Length: 222
Image (cartoon, rainbow, N blue to C red):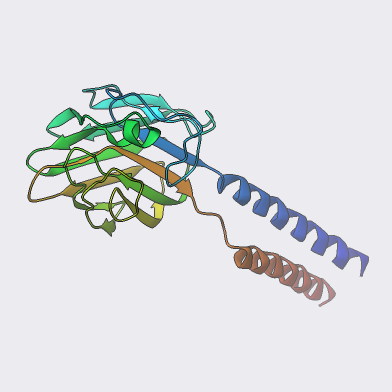
């Protein structure tokens, strides 16, 4: 009996440690503002996702590196952009939302892509922000998940100024996004918010651990 309890407690402890690690990973988030021509949002600005550090690419740059998560940790993230114009901007206001969506990269032929490497492997909720300049987001895919275009707007509105895509799986540290449109299309910014493991899944893992301990007890008796 003592041996069984010891095994069950060990299994439960390992699963709780795994759950704690999963919870920590679920707090991971990344914020990106493309082009620094209009400045960048404040650290306190969450937009539709998580407040924290906003990584900003240089105006006109197609690549950038050394980016971090919203806390300044997990550095080494790199960005590569493919688009016809890397320094689009619009005469907008000075709010955090304006600095996020007032500058952007775009392509007049309506085809753009971006890749991020060095991300932590996880399942994320992705927010894509359309420019305020009259350039649409475009229809596209993010690591194989399809999304539809938004037209852009002057307020933070899902389906107008940004598109939210759930359950984007990052493996190998990479995220690839591409989009196209019949006219000019581009991207002003993006956010990645890790999706936490549901409580029901944690309970299931704990139950499986206890069942495994019980099975080992029965086997040792046999």
